Amino acid sequence: MRALIKLIIISMTFLSCKDDTAKKVYKPDSSGNINNLLVVVDNDLWNTSVGDAIRNQIGAEVYGLPQVEPQFDLRQVPPVVFSDFVRMNRTVLKIQHSNESDIKFYTDPYASPQKMAVVSGPTQQALKALIEQNAPRIIQAFKKVELEEKQRRIKKSLFNSSALKATLGINLNLSSVYRIAKKEDDFFWIRRDTKTGIISLLAYSVPFQDFETLDLFSQRVIQLRDSVAKQHIPGPTQGNFMTTEMAYTPFSKLTEIADTKVLETRSLWKVEGAFMSGPFINYSFLDQKNNRILVLEGFVYAPSEAKRDYIFELESIIKSITIQ
Image (cartoon, rainbow, N blue to C red; front, side, top):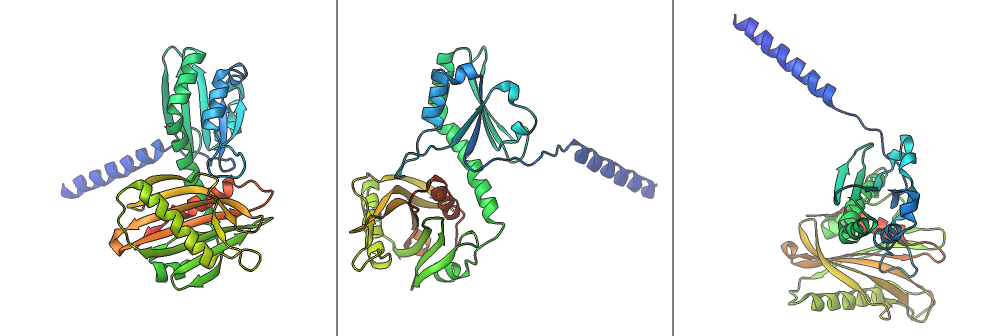
């Protein structure tokens, strides 16, 4: 009898596993370039204030670049076209008329990974208001998916970051196309070439300091980066060096990465005495556990090239950090 009961239990467990497997829905891989957003909206609405709100809010320019570049490359299609392979785009913003005003987010509705935001409203005015009010949420949701996708692609061929781990106690996921251009004590300059220039990542640390206000911390970050750049990042001729372009106001915000408070700063750099400049993104980690401020900064020099995706690549690398 016990043997029979045991057999029945095993059979039921097996059938239950089969049922769970049968319930799984396997989604095709999503597609699309990084930061390419599919906008599903009627052509008539696209040419009204609703379309303007999408372009001005969701497609707003990225702060800290020397030329105007949008957050996303927007590709509009009418709902009738939204089928088959068109549905495979990784990020989708859908605008539709409805009796009630609402915004909903969907994860992997047609492909994986995928994020879709659906904005519904009874009138153009209602749709426009919803887009403007919820633009930060929409952008954040799409950026999270794009960041993870960029990090996934980077992992396909990784740079050996053992030197960073041994010296600074950190792990970073970089593509193997990067190389260490300079290492002095606990300072690293890691870079890769582009068609016309270079993408660079700096990594170093300084003793920990407490800052009473965010403004004081922001000022200290600029002072520190200018001091380090003058010492380690020379210009094309003797006496030239990198510095912050103070004609462009740096944008700073306090955030958290790897369970550590971080000040993120975006602005422009230039080389004193030379016609060289570009964008930078600086993350200064308040690493109290190791009694230091850990700095990871990416900067781009790429004349005649768009720079948004280069800065986004550096952001993806820096946000992959783990701290020992």
